[in-house]
Length: 624
Image (tube, rainbow, N blue to C red):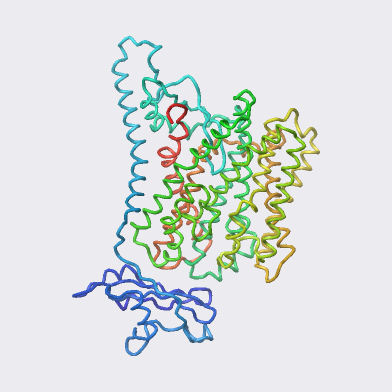
């Protein structure tokens, strides 16, 4: 048990102050009447906060551990087993107890854990059963191939055993905020075989076609350049999360990381400031495609914007988002109770465990409106924000159809309000321009980062861009000099926004005008730049950028991007939470972390897209 105690390591000056010990070794220690229990003691010594792992008999509780440490009872040869940091490293020798935490070697699932496991199993079992049904049905029909068949009363078979119907589905594209046309078979409800239609929609034979359907979406007005923008933005976010999550408390050379990464533009793909501009790209795409989807529905409804059409429009969005969202939430809750976490898991558990108290906020898509430390699986705040912005599209489209001047006044006022709100919140609360890796500015997330009144700008610009692209009568760009000037301004502004994120990265000690102006303007400006790229590509002035963003390679990745967004933090947290020793920052280590997380994310996202997400998109009409 002594060997399981945490001990001071080297490189303390670079940030290696935590002393995790050996949790598994402690739990494996067995005496005549007891076994080992791993506990963590969180201490403060001067300006330094750290934890020490200790091993005590399983009869000890957290209060007992606190008493043992405070009264210096944990000693060997009259030397404390939880000694203070050396005076050479810290001029303050007095230790202050912050808290203690003990972990159990057995995680007993409660009723909510069992319910979530059941939900996950059922959501996986139904598509597998439907796949088996479709395969057996194909075999049965193939055995009757020589029997005369009445074509008018039977369904012909498509490849992979799926039954053809007389239409194609208009299903939403993957990606957290976007939609796209697929040419996969639609699933209509036949009176004599409604159950069969539902099972067909859930079968892998049907859902697998939509993943690898690489037909150009531009044929249907789908703006093929969006695939590349979506995937590149997603990769940027995954790279940033892969670097940011371990930095919070897992590095043994955090100060080295700060000196190397936070001050160098070479690491623009990993520092948290510029990375989250990719989120604004997603908001822009969400607004653009929400406007296009609603306008298309209005055209099909004989140019009528009715209450029932708006209700169907919103329900379609819920059907698009919630199945995989609920599955991810249940999977996360289940993992918490089943996985034997290491010493670095505890800082995450307070947030993750809130799923049992605030799961309803995720179901209602309002999780971004509650305090950030109460959000169930915190990265899903975006889904709530996206849906709240999505509900404003019908109103803006109504104003556009009513009077274009009224629409311009309303849209301009909303853009001005969200810009001013961002500046005021930043100045009054003295916020940084992005969330520091130390997580010291809690107000940044509480009052700015996840709120609709500060993040609506890019989505609004997306709505205006979508309306323009859907209703334009003539090209906006008519001469090459216009396109050249537009590209120069676009790239210059994007580079300036990224550069200023480094210049203004420190949290201001007083209300700062530069920070407030940057926070107010950088998200709308970034969205305008991405809008320009889309417009230039659509009007034939994108050059090689159009070819790059429209590659068919992006299509299957784009089709699973929504699942990738929901899944990738789970792998990152699993990796960090299962570590028994700190991670050492080097460029090579972090590169391997990124690619490892990416490969696992793509694999699981493909499976979940087939089994959980796509079936609900293919259900139509009477199948619901």
